[in-house]
Figure 1 (tube, one colour):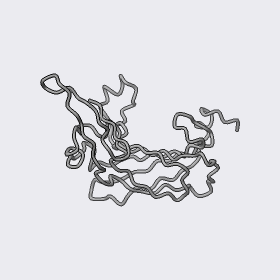
Figure 2: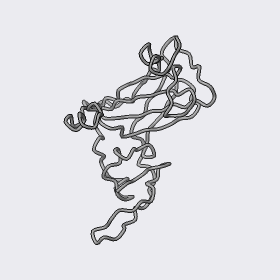
Figure 3: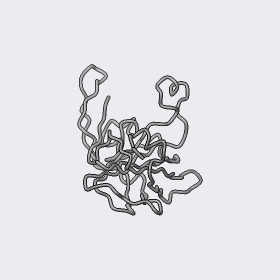
Figure 4: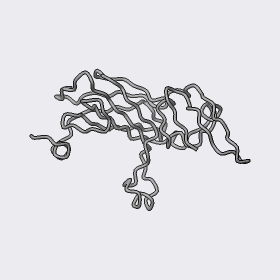
Amino acid sequence: LFIAILNGNVAKSYAEGSEGGNKEIVSSGPKGEFVKGTVTLKTGVENEAGSGAALYVTARPDRPDNVPRAILDGTGGKAPPVLAARFPNPSFPFDLSLTASDLTAEGASGVESKEDLENVKFWWEGEDLVVSARLDSDGVANTRDPTDLVGRGFLKRRGGGDDGFKVELQGRGVGGKFFTGAKK
């Protein structure tokens, strides 16, 4: 079963039913806000990105994944992203929220119907999350540029906290610039 969620809707998909027939998955509206927060620029950092820039934000549970499997598949033990979004031409500080329209396939695991999306408690809800952000200077997710800005923050939910997250963007550093082809 594969479910894609775009613009707050579970895309129509088909799964093999128990009698070998197809079962239609109906579309649904957004569940609501999963996380909210602010992305800022670290003091002294300037946004040199052009008009085609985009901010990419992902959130994943802040806990190790299945370590033996992680060794075999190369994930390094990180849980998969459960939410991902792209925001074109942001200005900073940038307030955002991630909703059902931003669920990844891993984040939507177990959702098979409209009712599931509206009523399910996702496997990662209630967990602390690592929120990563990257201001991509050309707006293309699969490219890396030395001028891209990156940052990471945490959303603490355990212990009753959920005041949102804050991510400060900064340069990639010497190692990141080396791997992305910087001349300096």
